[in-house]
Figure 1 (tube, rainbow, N blue to C red):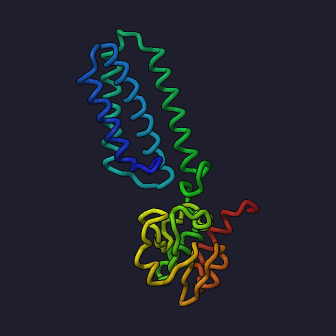
Figure 2: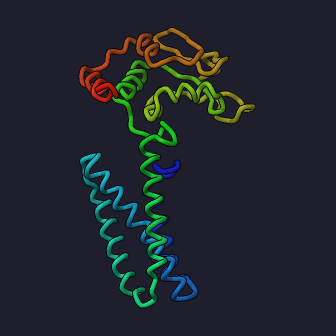
Figure 3: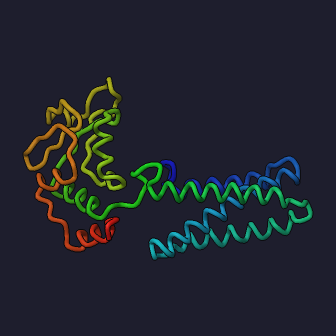
Length: 229
């Protein structure tokens, strides 16, 4: 995901932009400039994502490699056809924009702008999964600031929490049936093993209330990730 949109959708958007530029631009110069811009962006992002796959995820995706090959082909063909138009400065500007985009994406995935986009903490990931497996429930509303605070405790692992949205129809709309049945009056409200707590809880409190015992490997990962080591 990037800015809430699947990467594959961004990729199709770039391909559509390249195709539209090649087919519908009114002049050769405009066509070449647009194609240069979009293919430079597409190639840079494709190189970045494949590098992440290789060195961070340590796995390769056949579709990603195929897309990279297509982008390289378009880039080379476009370079040849537009060489006579002397687009050196335009290519340089497109490359600078592509570099800034890659830097923004990398900072985003590192959690600089939002912890929810950063890498998952192994302990919090396992705790969130444990709460779901233990059939705990986290009742909240999207407009509730304390609910957002609770999610921030888990960073990018918040998506694994057993969250129940009580206000799917807006702040003044009817509440979700599950929340009415449970008589949820305050947000956030946790129900863990029959115990009911209507406030923001720390990871340690949630682990204690749910009887969470992290696997030894998770504890080791957490210790190794500590800044003091």
